[in-house]
Image 1 (spheres, rainbow, N blue to C red):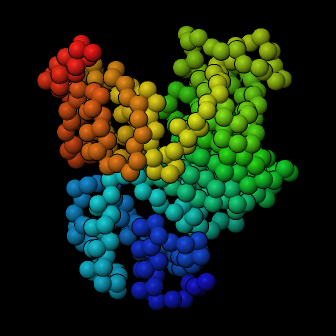
Image 2 (cartoon, one colour):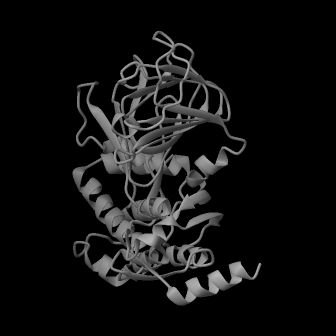
Image 3 (cartoon, helix red, strand yellow):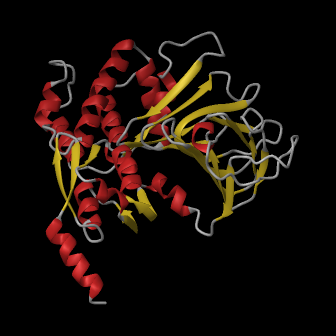
Length: 367
């Protein structure tokens, strides 16, 4: 494995491999060592990473301008080579994978002797981040998500805090249950694979178990409950503000009054991939309204979606997107909803296409 003492050109090559998603585990470890070697190395990497991210997230981004943003003379690597990398990034409008292992190495800034100091890993909108924790547990963070854990993780216990969506592939350790804190829930697992969706702005916390066993501890909620999940089980917890004045499903409660209605809905799903496909760059939609799709679209493509007519929000769509760009997704949606769109400076404006609506109505009546 390469150490921290290698040429700038070798470092540039590792950074390029990392940013383009073509880096091996050994190379990533070498790059972490190089980044940690000096504050100058950290600053240099962050400059290139930020320019790359901006290029990949904005289809109209100027690749030459991205290079020009860097400090003059900061990189011995040929200008033409880096400009080529930025042009490659500019061709991507799908979320792209950013190796999160690097974030783990210096996310908290300078090394802290306090083992309880928090490490924060953030996956920006328009990106999907994968990290591996010190115990071997793998975590995929969806766009616009944040994961926090203590530097002492895996020493006394294994606990993480999630804001957003993540898929966990937990390394088995019967002595140290893996715990995810999401909103006011604690989700406990041993060796298992599961997905948790807990964006702060969402009205629910959604847990989908792929395999293994997971316990949801709702003892700190307004209506305490406990629930053991089985594979292919899908549990939706309604946060207090959204549970009020809504019908609540009675759920078995451990350590509490089982006659109390808990704000939890549980069902079995045959295809858990609907809820986990995002980690592989895919997007499976099952009878979602345009209003619901817009929320995911904003996170997935780092854009803001604006509806000119409220009517459009009620149209629904089902289907699967594989590696489609933002415009390709919108054109596919036009096949089922009479919409027209405009993309300008990261804002997607959706408007009702009256002509298309009339065609759809005629086609429907002729059936």
